[in-house]
Image (cartoon, rainbow, N blue to C red; front, side, top):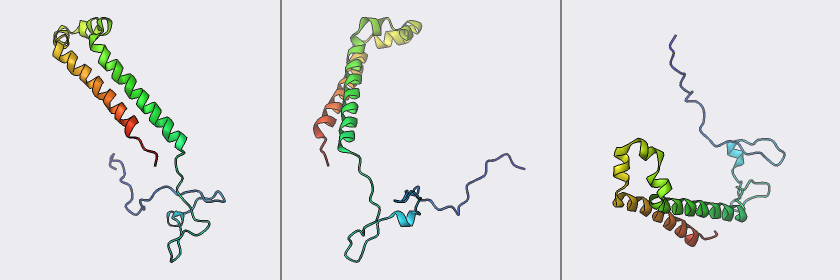
Length: 131
């Protein structure tokens, strides 16, 4: 007997999980789609996909922008901080890395990545439109 894991059967249909119906029972994938008449209007009792509440979308946007700004500010400041950059235990353990990261160009590149993160946060906040 082989020690190989069994491959899944190819007879299983690949479909999304069934949605619960109004009575609490799960409907099949084909009955979960909205039923429409000849004019294309949805009949009463058909299922409609749930929308994410607007307050939750705004809260997610706010948290995403704040996190990106915090990370951007931290990455901009870190290369110029004496306690974080010059006395870093990793850099003290490996002197070759310490020589490399002490160059102004490396510090500038890391700060540039922080500025890029700040720019992305700013663009995300400005370009967001409620839909």
